[in-house]
Image (cartoon, rainbow, N blue to C red; front, side, top):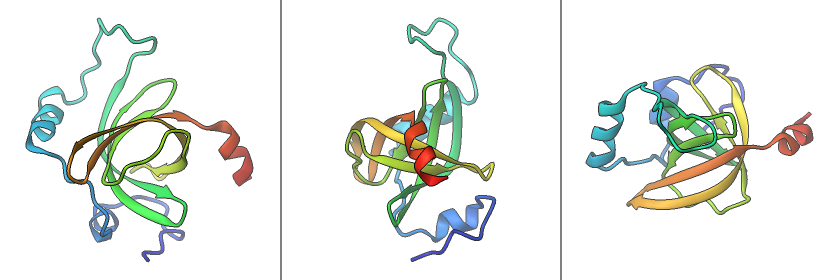
Length: 131
């Protein structure tokens, strides 16, 4: 198992070293490149989402998964994962900024082999348990 505890910043090298890696289908790769960092102004959601389009590492128990952070809102983060995560499951998402964010899964949808779209909310109770 790759020991990530001493690293403070997420690097491409650490991300590539993980065996469990999200494989984005071509349709999603094109969508991420097409929309870039544009925030949709006429979105019907309660809170606007800001595209992240960055690599990330999901820390689920003692397992590490190379993921792609999709978007960010006031309520949570959307990302693509190589594994199915169940609703109410808690995890941490390690972002390139070096921050690990505690999250709780709200939904999971299979997009392709080794690619699941995960919706999460920020989990303040999980964060309190860590302190």
